[in-house]
Image 1 (cartoon, rainbow, N blue to C red):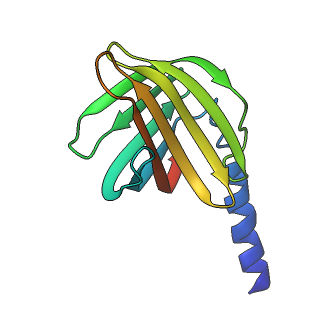
Image 2 (image 1 turned 135 degrees about the vertical axis):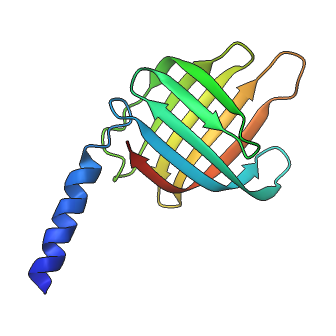
Image 3 (image 1 turned 180 degrees about the vertical axis):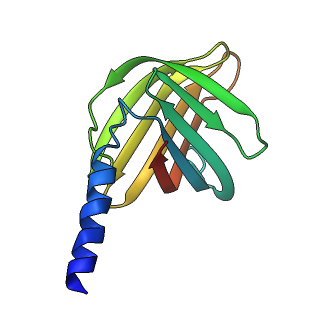
Length: 134
């Protein structure tokens, strides 16, 4: 039985090692949204997809999708099964800012700091419940 568990763990570690945020398309799902500015937390579904071609798609609870072009990546995170962090400077026709992907001892988060003309910044953290390469 121990051999069976070791084989399963080996297979899992092999598949997660291939999840390089820079070269894989990865879908990140969150059910908790924390507003950094006012401290409010809400339970709602958000999906963020990083695409290897240099874009990030953010699907909000109402089903609307915002697509951002990555203009610069700061840092590397070559194995999402391990702790790591990468910052993406992003822009779209309506918004620009920074999207950070981080895994540390507190879990996995996607941090959104987005700006748009004539509006307050959107400064939120999504607690990731699941992420997987496509």
